[in-house]
Length: 222
Ligand code: SAM
Image (cartoon, rainbow, N blue to C red; front, side):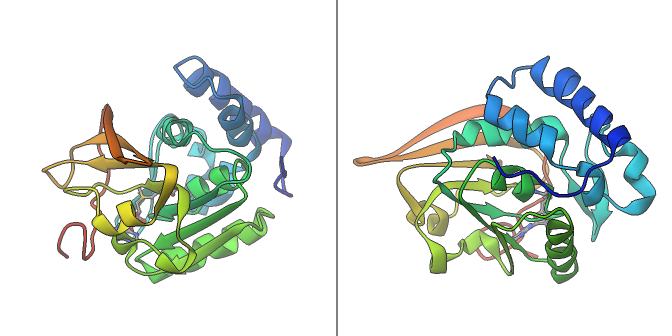
């Protein structure tokens, strides 16, 4: 596994506690997920004024009315994706870039797409600062996916939509997994896992969640 460049002993200890108390003590058992979450300096991905809260058990605001997700949810979704080291992943909803950084340590390549230009630019800079080189940040509407690099072995959507976009289904490789919050309300969803098989798709509900809305052509309207 590649290791991000910068680290600080105090944050490292806080991160280790997060992994033990918030992840392993719950139901995160995938050692690759636990190792990635123990390696990524989450404090780099939150606003400076909130760094002291970087390892608390919840989401934090990152600007533009958006959030960096709770560490447990990041781990849960990464575990549900069931990634292999050679996989290529699409993340819809870059936000701070933290989730992309975690996935980058578990997969070969991550393409992440964010509709807010300011967030995309900041995430790009933070990922560079963290020494993570296998993530490409795109600005645009990820509800339509990113066909230029399809198909993907894993697709993760970190914002809630009314349904799984057809474009994302089409961009999923055979054998690939997609994880996304889906719900008929803009704020309450069920996390769903979709697997593409040779004969079609298998869909499985995982857990109730609360995400910011997926705003775009194949998500909610603006
Ligand atoms: N993965 C992020 C992280 O680690 O910080 C958390 C993402 S936040 C919960 C959801 C993000 O999805 C927001 O930054 C939001 O702007 C973005 N988003 C919503 N609709 C989108 C769309 N259609 N395309 C791309 N990004 C979108």
